[in-house]
Length: 352
Image (cartoon, rainbow, N blue to C red):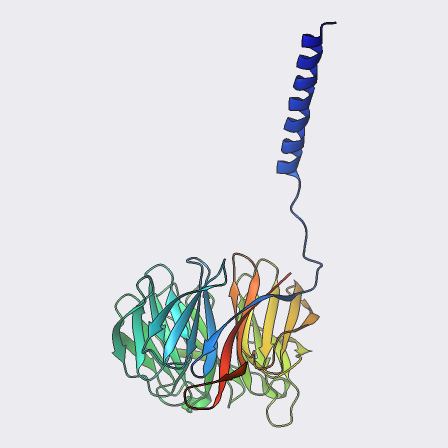
């Protein structure tokens, strides 16, 4: 056998082997991380120039919005870096319409802005502004308040006020509205902390159509999440004065309570991940409760994740399944211009 033929056969075998390896590599299943515990993957820090409350992820356009003091800081969901700032826009948090590239800072006044340019378009009065909601079916922003009007409704295309929801509490009472969710089928749900209820609202008529009483099972609901496929609400309750923090799980169709589970702290934010079938509740004591929906009738506390003190609100990146939280902490050996201890804004990314 000639040396030339031997070399050719060796080369052919090498190419074939490489081809098989690459093929197997392509069809090899991705690593299953579903049984791994959640943990802090990374934390981005920038100087904090004021107070914070909520955090919002725009998974489609790969951005995270944090209202801090008199500005909104915008971070990249993939690099975790600060990418821009909306100046002179004070508020508790930001509602975002990913398709129309608009946002609304929930403050008084509320700032309606272009998310691509990070430029304010207009402002509008929003007394008592606190939480917020974006409903993609109606393209409406909702600003939630603890005073009348309890909910202010804004068109996400042009920033005009299109309606108000007054006295959303039971029997027409005023209410402390904390968080809202949409089922994508024309129904909105708002938890009412001072009345221990979930209010049901028609997304088109903006009329209250019902109330789900949590009774003694859940006091002071603050976080609210929804499994739209199985029509299940997760009401994360602080427990009220001296009460026990509890997750009340109920039907979004008729309000029937399915079960309750303990939380690791007083909730101020909640999200549901339909891909992992998990609900998350964030707490100011630096914990994140993870609740697994094993079936529409079976739920368990999967784990309690250690985050950071003050990380009481959260949002979800639906592309990476990462939960994002925010808090502030002292900046080492630094003082602000006013002579007070300087603060850092922490944007915390939790995943598996």
